[in-house]
Image (cartoon, rainbow, N blue to C red; front, side):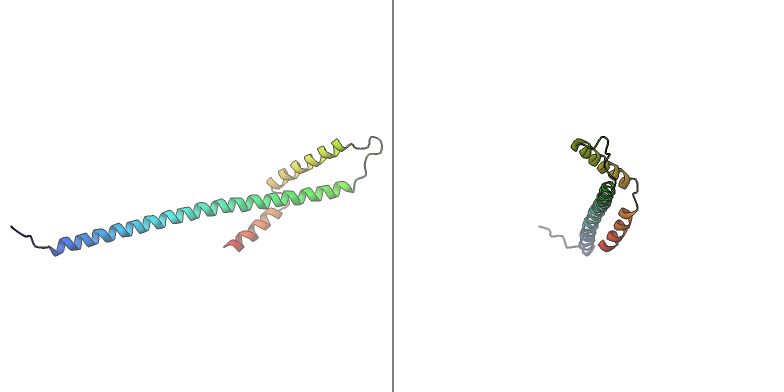
Length: 119
């Protein structure tokens, strides 16, 4: 029976290959974790921007409602409940479109301030 001796070089090569695999696994894990964080941050950023736009639309809608209350009703025809509901719905859509188109800049200022506080 012949027993082969342990070669120091083969042991060293095995150690190096094990380290390389461990480093590659660690790097790939870190890369996946970083990609997940970037994706999550992008989703959170979009949510924040959308929320700021929604807030601006709500603010503009409130402003429109209060301004409309200062205008007297038409004494000749009056206004029905249906007309008031339709006017309210139209104002809501109008203010949403205004906010999405840039609005008065409230959403942008809120987004900048809140995104700085998140970092």
